[in-house]
Length: 266
Ligand SMILES: Nc1ncnc2c1ncn2[C@@H]1O[C@H](COP(=O)(O)OP(=O)(O)OP(=O)(O)O)[C@@H](O)[C@H]1O
Ligand SMILES: [Mg+2]
Image (cartoon, rainbow, N blue to C red):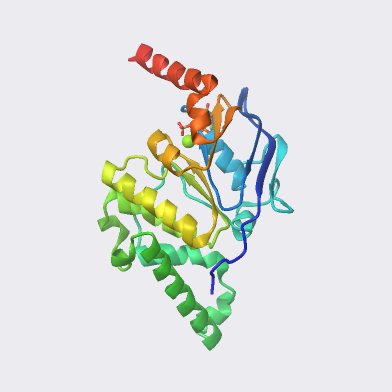
């Protein structure tokens, strides 16, 4: 019931500026996410990557600039409206610990429910049917993300890697056309990273959605991304294919500069 056969719309970020008292976290940032692509957003700590996701998902309103999804201007929409328009995200530091995997995925389906509260409470046939369809789809998404065998398990009993994948699967339950992943493999071991990379690939191929990927694991970025936008101190310093940005002198400077600072501090 939810297979997407159409291409996702273009996500266009234009001249977005975000300021926090005295700090410009994003300085006229522009990039375009090609439909169906994996677009990586990389940069040293504090570069503005999560801030950018907060703008894309409606948590922050930029001081200037715009975000468009196809013909729709998202810039001043509330987060639930943006989610309903097809942009789903995961958070950098949040891992679910409550309920079963199934419970968490059904929460993700909530925004798609057509049946009203009364119809659901009265268990009207239409509401029961809809609930059954949502459950079936949640199970499919669990299979796709490797969580099928854990569908009825409490999240608290899963490995860290699997718990992080619950977040990913929950975001997918919104049937997004654009999926924003903020450090999906942070804290994972090598085997978990490889599995998550496979899942991202599978999801993109099967669901045809666009993925915006924030990640510090450069190996993963280089393997998965079609295009890369590099931020440093809130500015776009490079853009191109993984190979192009890897050789870009500005990018090398930004990363080496960060390492030098970390060494100095140590
Ligand atoms: N709510 C906020 N209030 C004030 N400053 C903020 C806020 N959120 C972020 N910042 C600052 O904005 C800058 C960008 O932060 P952001 O979290 O977007 O970076 P990031 O690229 O995601 O970094 P990391 O790789 O460490 O997650 C940082 O200097 C950060 O301290
Ligand atoms: Mg961040």
